[in-house]
Length: 363
Image 1 (cartoon, rainbow, N blue to C red):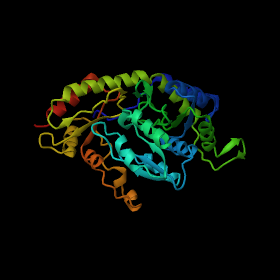
Image 2 (cartoon, one colour; image 1 turned 90 degrees about the horizontal axis):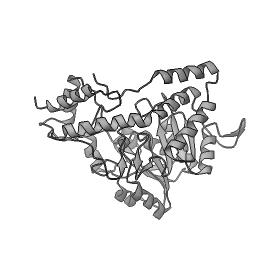
Image 3 (cartoon, one colour; image 1 turned 90 degrees about the vertical axis):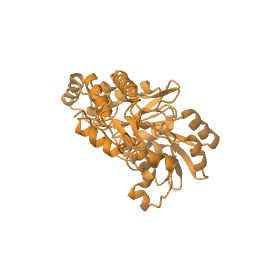
């Protein structure tokens, strides 16, 4: 089976972890600081604050930005639930705006329609590794005096107009094993704002300004030096890894564009898509539904996944909270999207297998 994701862990990474284990400094220490410095330089921000995972990065980014009870934050319903859940963690309310076709990212035009006097921030998600329309979103934030918090958990190295995702506002990244780079579990907040950075550092460490001096309610969101050692190695290979993803994606798009009912992803102008996922839309291919196509590909040894089968606003928990929005574009997309293997360990032979399996759907 060609897996939908496969992290690349080489001997240099194993040795880096072994060196940390031998050092005896296992929790947050010098390696975390080294990783933060390198990651901030890569993204192009003044500060980077490492956390336990992408969810905690989103949580403390929102808190550091001053999001709290009574506030509204506009975001996309087409993402992993953590994007919206972290808004709830702060006592604020997620407000969902529908997405644009064909990028499947949040629609700037529809964001404007959702702004109320309670709106405090916009939280766009750079879905699948393609940046949102940041020019328009930044304009909206400026016009309405809103905070911009980027969910870049799938967009390590992605660019809009030559500028890295996560550098436009307060950026949030995940280093889960399926991401373009991993630390096992881990996250990062990026920002140019010194006050936000300081607040985030305090929040991730039990609200301590210094040891045993607790200035606020905080959390244990510290990254370990073990994870940071992995992250340093992964960051050094990120551009090469992304290039492989982009090359694999280009081959797939060229090879499958003629197949009826299979719509390859679209890359919007001025954006560098780093293909955390290569996600097609299945629109009745050879009379087959998306789920039938997924089953047939699995039978031929091609691993797939659906990101995401049910939008956040339709999740049972959100229905219990009273969400009953009708968001037609995202609801249609959720019934059609199917992710294919595109990661750096996909070989040329694997790509041929994927293309052949798709071409044989009618059989």
